[in-house]
Length: 200
Image 1 (cartoon, helix red, strand yellow):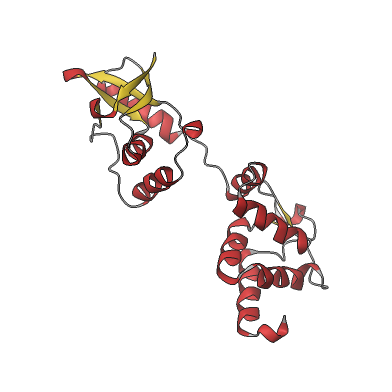
Image 2 (cartoon, helix red, strand yellow):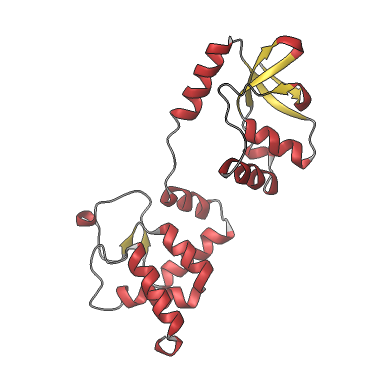
């Protein structure tokens, strides 16, 4: 059953739910800062005593909605005892397949996210192909890389121009061989060019 429920009626069972701290708190802050109902999956809840509903999945989304100022959230209500709630929590959160940085970046480009688009432009300028899924080095082609995270961090830390030149130090030289565009190599080249800007 799907229905909108008051956030005040939603509770968390600490025996199987995780407290919101550390990375969880950062996740809540991110959801709140970018809040959009289009990306809000219904919260999975189960009725408990006192007219309340135990959150099985969606604690972070619910907390973010409350921080933004909403009083209600869409919920998928399931009838389950406490053990079934915990089992459902484990199934939903434990069996989730994490998305790689490569897949997230590719989705960001299609979604026209400014940061992802800018990184794609940098790579195009340097003739670098960002792979969308893991590929063994012996199966890669020259100019391909899985180091999406390193490229994103270098773009933020060193800027587009330095990053492009660093990538070109591989793609436009005899070093352009499969596997050369590793995270360690890209970061090292950016650091060298930052310290010796005249080499650019």
